[in-house]
Structure formats: structure tokens, C-alpha cells
Image (tube, rainbow over all chains, first blue to last red; front, side):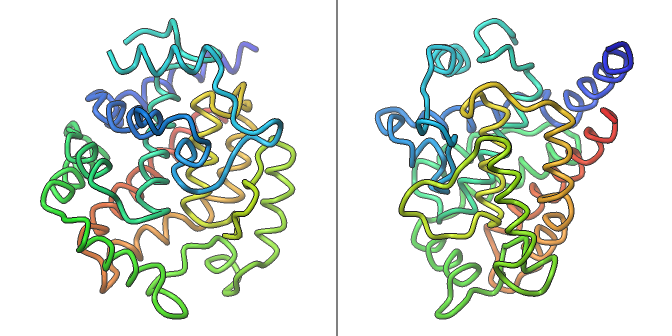
Length: 73
Length: 201
């Protein structure tokens, strides 16, 4: 929709300017999410909160794996 | 940074939001272990308000010990019958635990396809669980992210209505030392989220 397209760039610019330019949180967040050897258990993936996707539990899709691999680089 | 390879085509800024929520979820669900402290200690914020808070958190993480944090976390959130703070939406919104806000949250979780793991008895309106929900929604962990409109409704109903006050309380808590900058990161991030959602109206 046109309205959404006009407003979304403002939101994106704002978020980028609001501290994420450093990209440093990405390092922490990615590692917290993937956690190396511990990454495969849903409990670790959900940071110990016990929250998960409702259907079939946690799904580590190829996309997710690729993201974590690329984001680490 | 690239967008290719990001799950579900999620834009970079939403992945970064997810990671900030993930960081808060990890710090608020349990005392940080050595690995989490090392990761947090490596964060470098920029000169924005949130960036400054992240830098302060990193400094605190580098100075902290897991033993001291076990005690601090316990004093803040566990105690004997309760900790200094009760980080639950129901409590902040009604003065009581396990109230209507929790019931509404469960309905919205079901609509969004999010659940609580088996064997977990902590109410879902705990700040750490809510941060984890936002993390999951924006990281691809829960599949295709909900629309921005759905996320905003969720945020307004279950987080924005009380979490800013909680993070202020955390920053000011008697038992807080390491968790002071955690509270500040939470406050500043909540402000960013609220402002960003308003832009998407």
C-alpha cells in the first residue's frame, strides 16, 4: 500500500539512527541466540524464558541457520 | 550489512530490534552466566540515548562477577516469597498477579502462534517472556514475522502499557547495581520502540 511505503522508510531510518548504527548489539544478540554448542535446544534459543512457536515447537529452518552464520561473519 | 540471507526477508533494523529484545530477555530471565557477561561486555553503543545505555551496560558487564549477579538477581526478582520487584504485566496494570492482562496476553499469543513450553510454570506476562516473544517475532524464530500493525497492537497492549515503568523501577531499585544499566537500556529501548511504532501508524 502506498501509505505504508511512504511511512516505512521513516521508521527504518529512525531505527537505524536510534543506536543500531554501531551494530554491536547484533554481536551479542546473535551469539546469545545461537550459543555455539548449546544452540540446538529450544530452552537456550528462548533465552530460558520457555517461550516458543506454538506449532511443532522451535523450528531451526535453513534460513535461520544461514542468518546466524552470516551475521556472525 | 546485507539483507540477503536474513530469514524471511526480515529487514536489518527489525533483526537488530530482535537482538535487543533477546539481550533483555536473557538478562531478565536468569542471572547472567560468564558467557553472557562476556558477550554483553563486548557491546559498543553509539552516541544515541540507547547507544549510551548499551555502552554503560557493557562497562557494568565487564566489572561484574557471576556470584554477585546471582545475589543481585535473587534480591531483585526472587527473594524468599518475592523479590524487590514483580516484573509482571498484570501486577503493573492491576496491582495483582495473574489478572485479566495475562488472560488477554494468552489470547493474543494464541492468535500469533506463540506458546509457553511444557513444564514452564512462570506466567507469560513476565517481562523476560514478553521480550522473548518480541525477539522471536522479529528474528524468524517463530516463522514469518507478524505484520507491523499486529506487532504494534501486541506491543501497545502487553508491553508499552507498563514496561517503561518497570524499567524505571529497575534502574532505581535498592538492590540493583548491574541491573541499573539494564533498566536504562530497557527504558531507552522502550522509548525507541514506541516512537518507531508511532511512525508506522
